[in-house]
Image (cartoon, rainbow, N blue to C red; front, side, top):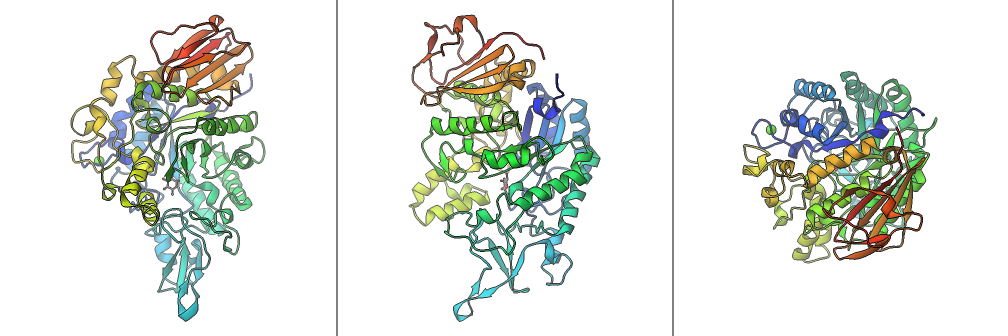
Length: 564
Ligand code: GLC
Ligand code: CA
């Protein structure tokens, strides 16, 4: 059989280091804690770890504002302990991926500090500096009408230079000027630095934003958030810069690269991930399936729509089939917890299992975010002042202009990505076993029930279901290689799909309903001849060629044998 690259068969565990495990008692997760938990990560069946940024950073955006690309944040340890994590992960057969954030740096990065010293500083052109304009009465005006994703206008004035710099995210995250070949050389140096150390690849942060329309023109008609998007999202130059990184560096290593691409559809993604000479990324992190209950990347909650979810997932499955490979995920550090969104806290374990199988049995590489595997849920805080995230502040500010404070709070409680950033729940001891000190952020009060130790001991827990699911994936060819077909696309209660690989067939039936719902199998499937391989209820039987699904019931049926 044809050679399959290793990344297609792997399962990735994603760590947001600040909240994973504190090894030295200062209340902040760190690499000592990671070392201690490597066996746990391995016990899930993970083949790789992706670390959200570990680099020195003033933490305006918790590490996504980097002040040194070639070191480790002192909160997390140092290069020596990082190398030990790398070695010990490798010894356990797990690869390690770093987050590469090169759309922007921190405003405290030495390049930026130099760049703002004078207009003729050699680093000035590392960033997008533009002269201030003057309006009526000498009023200062930014160079164009773009707005940032996190912080009002996309421009910040510097009185010393009488210029503005561009920041698509927070003020403390100035955008790098990737058109400058010197900046691209710096990126290549960073890539080589980590690859030469033994790192196995990168998750590339907002990589579809790295090129901007020359001349940085204003954008009309104006949109309320991220105005200017079409002048910096998915420009042809972004592709050519990525091709250059691949040609000059990445192709010389056996490594994996996944790009993050907010507001990108599958057709656009194919420009980057289509296998062949123009491929620049192995996979792309899609967003559309994360928007089945919200608008503007979680900012505005809406009622959950199963048809919207199914349409998004199927679109990426169909379009990439035979051409590229999907990155599969339902949680990360940028989104609220999935059970609180697409599942049900009341049926936490049932819906958690259903959601796990729902996405992990699709075609692609599954990513699991810390705490997802034990079914951590959202953590609404009672006051806006208790939140710590720049994006959350921005949403609260924008919403506050339109709505009363109480309403703003309830929207934030549902939509904030901080729901995913509460400390990992290891046991039912103080601070959920995350730290012996004072945790940097609030621990979710449900940790007595929802924690690794309790679930580890319960064969029916969500945690042990994830382990079985991953083991099943790895040993079942139709899951790894089979094609995909959605059934009953218009059904409002069930998401049903079939995978096929030669004579092997897999039927995945997911009820998204909290009520009883009748399921009838398709005509060419005789359920009594198929084997029920995974489910989230103990006793299951068929009635006719179907069954009555209980709340959030999952049934996965397999037919036929096939060898890998
Ligand atoms: C990505 C990261 C997010 C960060 C943003 C700016 O979307 O995942 O956490 O805030 O980029 O770097
Ligand atoms: Ca610590």
